[in-house]
Image 1 (cartoon, rainbow, N blue to C red):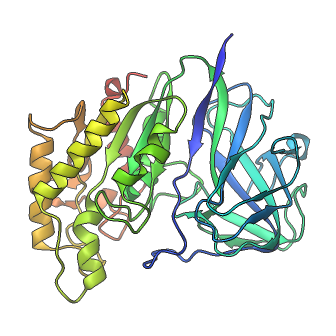
Image 2 (cartoon, rainbow, N blue to C red):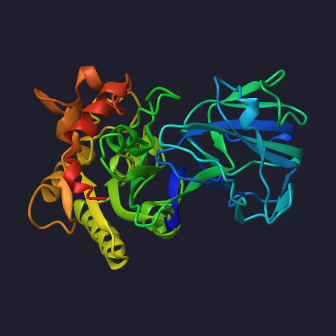
Length: 382
């Protein structure tokens, strides 16, 4: 059987040196960093992606191991496998660079939980990171790469350096990239449960799967948090092996973040015309690459607890954009009404109580399932 490398896990990353931070980044010194992920699809071999894209100094990796996870920071010692990079067990990754491990010939399947352990002997400085990783990570003193469980670990809730896994899948395997903000990334869903709406939707597919390139706080038109969506297209979509479809949710932070950052002062928001122009540019660039693009309406957020985020001006623009998306003039191959799936029918600009995570801006596990269940899987003809 002919096979090809296909992305089975992705995590979009943030520059820890941005002027505004929703999450505190960190570095590591003489520590083993152990992080887990769940594969969206399987294959007969795999390779791991690491990133020092936003580091300001070379990153010394004193060793890297892969294993199947048992529970928490525990691993199955029978599956503990050293990773190599161009044949070497260690590497120094220059600032601004990313790398891919040599292939590991280990058959894996959709739903498998892998644990990646990195020994970082020097002071890393602030590391390239992701806001909402699959699960809580752990750092422990010294070189504990092969430890079945870590000795004296500390927990951290952001993801660091680990950006993806490819699997050697049958040729012709096609996947979708979920691309956008916190509603894509899965903020406020249960850590380690794989309950983001793209993950739950992926499990409904009969072929192919979905990988997640959401960044909580991300915007279509403006950098911070993360590069804006239009700037991320090449790296986070077009460079993903196997991608044929893109599922987009974006806009909450374009409309809410300016007011939140300026609070209690007023803020200038993008107009509906600004936003529809940006979405059209997004669709055109993805279509030029031969991809199918499915947009979603902007989710409800009236009454969110974040000061200055909810404004009458922002709500008016949101309604204009959603009306345009649900009409006949948008540039996408299809539009899914994500907002309607989780809105309170009596107050459609608010998240239904059953789906509200508690902050009025994000959905809980049940809300993510409601979104996944509301999307027509025939739109994802993988």
